[in-house]
Length: 576
Picture 1: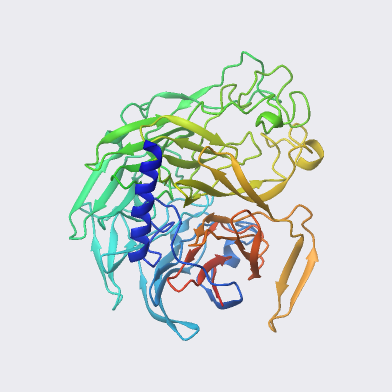
Picture 2 (picture 1 turned 90 degrees about the vertical axis):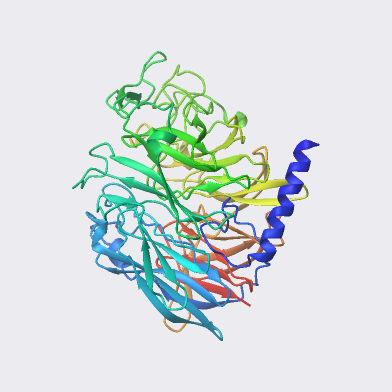
């Protein structure tokens, strides 16, 4: 009964907030990152707008870069009544240095059925690293206090006048250090404070992972401009020191893994704990802040951190050794690998349930390629999507209670901020659920881990779903992408298609819209935007643009129910 009362009171708060916040002001809509709104989406009858915001995509997909794959993350369109704010890029793309590009924000205003440019603000923010390190990080502003807040250089942000496009810098530091980066989307809390993460590298660092970091910070800026800054070194007390040794994975030992039932994985220097890149802080209704952190030099050394409203540590919990669904676990019991000794399986005789790369229970990794962000559910629990390689690179969702207890996991979680559908005194979790093909089960050796998943593991084949889980992480429904057609539209609007995807297309959405009727909106690499009813039936779809190898992209919605989606550097708006 107590749980139900908490859920109902939280739902009342969420519904009340949605009545007064009819726009989309930040990543995944709100501080909890739930993606659920009271707005009812329009029918997907027409692509009203198609705007190119990233003209560098041909360079990013070029033979010296992504080779036909767009390895970049993009912001969610921010919707504010009649106005829409979306990023733009210029400059040139250099796979060895992201800083050759320039980022900014365009304000568009609706005039009839057309978006008209009102102004553009060019920022001095630069993405850290290069394609040699990770996929291009996300640039993500937020709306609050009558302003647009935009990431800036050296750990700063800009407060931009929404009428004029003029910006005023807010800088928590005493200089602009080009080795210091605003490294997350901006989150707006219930009090209209702006929160974000900053990471500082050693001066002159070119290889992002060559050295340990200097420091990292969480920043909170009040509506009046008061700045609070706290180092993650004080917030992650209890984790291994930067110069400590942490358990890594087998690398030189012969495949298949684990090398033996008693094998012990090697250790490496951990590096200092810092927030994962692209990860917007999540904030619960009680003011608790959630951030997932990793060791700079080891993606396996990961933690979920709860921060008190006064910016002190509340608790911190490891994400290592949380899963027991590895070697030898049959599919009927939640395993995802072929049997031990079979192609794609672990070495014969391997310990039951372990990650073959470590010979220990599986753990969530944080790759800086990802844009997954913690989500706070209506009962105060936290859901976070992490990477795991041993289950065909699908990752896992981890579910923690508000006191830090580990509750459950689910066998997908890669690069996804799941949506929360609150209903009837409980809630459900909406996620993409890609069962990837062509990647091998747990290693990159085509002999030991054959890439043809369907041939070697027919009980767990290549398939692509949107799934809804209940609050205990059991599947309520799944919608499978069964489209086999790659389609293109010519200059006259004529669409031609060829059947070349027998297993369907990957879902490339990384944050959802769940509208006032519970309809889920998600885009796919097949170029379609889908509207899915509760129960997992197809309500409607509309073709926009084929986006094979596309960047993971979020969706958003306006107060009038128009749907904003994107792929391959194009912003689409869809409506009646």
